[in-house]
Length: 399
Image (cartoon, rainbow, N blue to C red; front, side, top):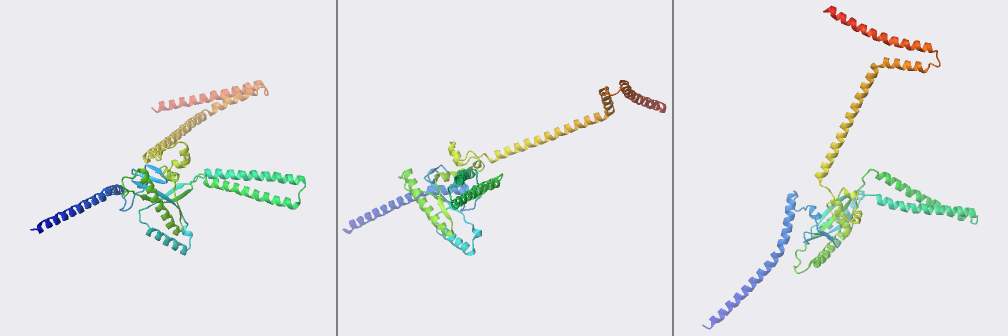
């Protein structure tokens, strides 16, 4: 009987231990699954977007990279501070000009880079139109400075010649410097001329290569505020970016992390393909431009405008052709009328000519000549009338 209380105490103690273990397991699973929904929700949204766009499983659309809320601390912030992105720009290499050994080294370096990845990345290629206006303007300023220096040196050389106080060796040395400056000046002018000629009515394109590195701070504790989360995201992304830069250096590819302004330019060029050639990011910021993707019109709207222009151009061509045709018809009718009245106009002009030459020819002869023209005119009309009368008589006799 004495053993019964001991057994009961052991049972109670074992029950308490089981209860405590059960409670700990519940807390563990609650904490674990509490952080999962966010990540699963984000992955679910991305998968739905991929399915809508017909992408294979595992491949993300670039639109997941483009949509964003803000750009801060060299990062693109997305999905209400639930996703952070840092971008590494890569300097491309000319693979085709390499030897076989160099190509093999690049390939091995790229394989090593892929093997070191422990997180997803995106490769983004952007084609841009190079605007040479600013470069040409800056180059012209430098060439003008060289020209001004050359002019001063020539004046100094002329003064040295006129003074006669310098030795021939000094003059020749100074002339040699002038010749070098002149060659530099002419070379700069030729470069400007050739560049302007090359870029005239042509689009000079270049490609930019980027590695997009995302980070999801889903495992961060909720008691941290936004600034602390941003700091941790920046630290993690910066570490990943530096690791990638070191890895791609094995492929002879140089990389750098884009700052906030460069990220803004990257997105601005992506959203405004046409307008970026006219208004670049620097001018847009100076003019108070505070939106990133509202300037590019809808594709269908652009097509409607182009169709309207085509209709207007076609209408102008039709109107022009009809006017030319009407003018040609009028000219034809005028020519035909003038041809029918040719004899009469010639006789009228002949009388005018006779009258103008009255002072040089006897007046009686002029009058006789004018009378002769009048008689011929009357005779012609009488002959026509007689022919008409004969024609009527023939018709009457035939009846």
